[in-house]
Length: 193
Image 1 (cartoon, one colour):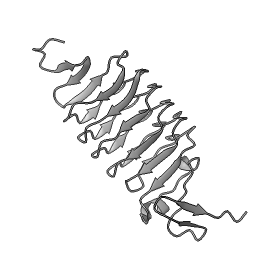
Image 2 (cartoon, one colour):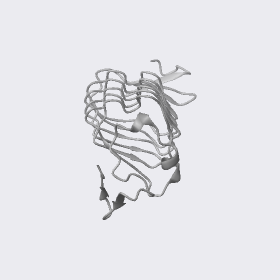
Image 3 (tube, one colour):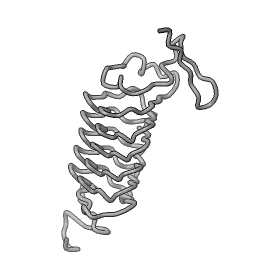
């Protein structure tokens, strides 16, 4: 990409759009940790599709949207730092990121679209810092993680759906007489059956 290009530029082989400031494409051979430039507001469709050698991604807090298939097939991705301003995680954004171990869904997330984390079979822990977002069909398909939300948030009790029933919820909600908290990060649940 020419330095005079008014629309795109490249840094360490990663292609960015100038306005709006967007991550456009990561080279498929990119290895190790990727720290996306500060100020980026969107990760474009297929930006990191099939980048199998990326192990860690750090997104700046300015990112509000992760597009469809953005990191689909990043099979060696172990961790991702989600941005504080994130609102939307589109369909298949992290599809089959098999080695991803845990994620924290930031407080402003409103939507997690279909198959966003489907096939993330290594995912063991999901922490929701947000109110109950819209969670589409299959968003967490083939995921057997423990999931946590902010204790006492009534949106989780009212917004429950079958699309997240495959996850394990140690809290089970603040009004469940068969569940409780015993310690800072320990929860119990009595199954009467």
